[in-house]
Image (cartoon, rainbow, N blue to C red; front, side, top):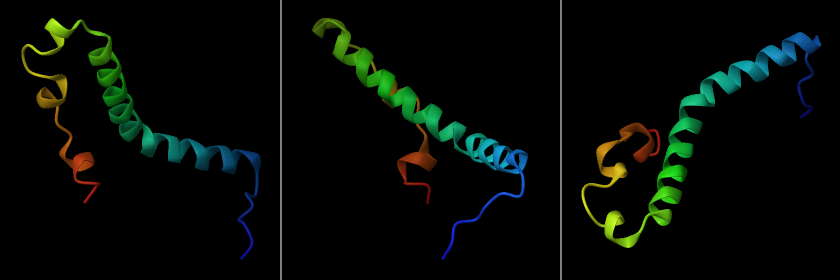
Length: 68
């Protein structure tokens, strides 16, 4: 099957913008998790083990369940 070709460059740009808009919330959650893991690794051991972890405070049930 052949790949779809856009009728104009603007139509291709519009399609890319739509997909970026739809994926933005997912990207933000994944980036937040990545930053939390990085910051947790950078903390001194006595601070990292006290209190609640950021993952426990912020839950994203739709993403945790795989979008189901």
